[in-house]
Length: 338
Image 1: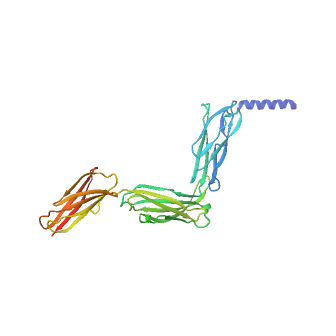
Image 2: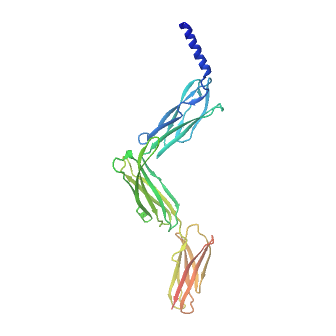
Image 3: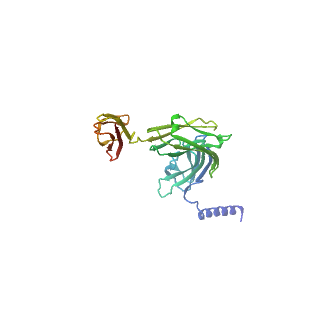
């Protein structure tokens, strides 16, 4: 066989192999998983990657849309992928301020031809957020006077920010808060995490014990100071509400040492909240009467009078108050007749 005949034979053999082993008719991503490793938010605010999609069909494929599973991740797609060609899917990630730890998002591309399965691409990274206070604000809601509430505050700092031993100090900006808030310790740990690239960070944990004293809205300004590079003092607001107590204060009223037929009066204070409503007021005991009442500064003041003692001795009584929700409150009354 001559050279020309051999060339013809080789060409026929190549065509036969193509017929026997056709290229699969599909549209696919060449590398559907991408890891960005450790992403340092201190140096840049976003990162990018292009996924490559290849169309092995003999016809153009129309792309319908793309969506991502993370709000900080966006992607763009072309309208069409031509036969036996490739296109790039640019993906942009802008982590939220304060992001920290593993990042994982899926980018899902769908097609006009619903018989084609969507292409799912995975993007991963380990985000080094630099410095973080967790939580950045604290709202404890309602705490009753006499109760105690404990909350942990964590200060996290990347090792890249600290050359010397890490220091974090938590202070209370308003001095009056010290009566109701106790800072305990400052447990310090060193942690590292991440499979797609490791970074280390320091953690200091503060325990705050809240002992409510002041009724009503309470706002405490906590401040964090640190020796981390470029760190500026940060504030952490702490809020809680202490409901007004419903009680007689004092709960025993002494009218005094009196002579027979002598009269006297004393003010009896009942502390309550704005929503408190009285259903009934009653005085028991010989010689006692409610002369008047008024409301001022979250209190109901009862002017209790005593008179008409017929003989020497101790006279006991009670001021009974019933609220609209069915609760009853009692203040004891007493007088000593000479």
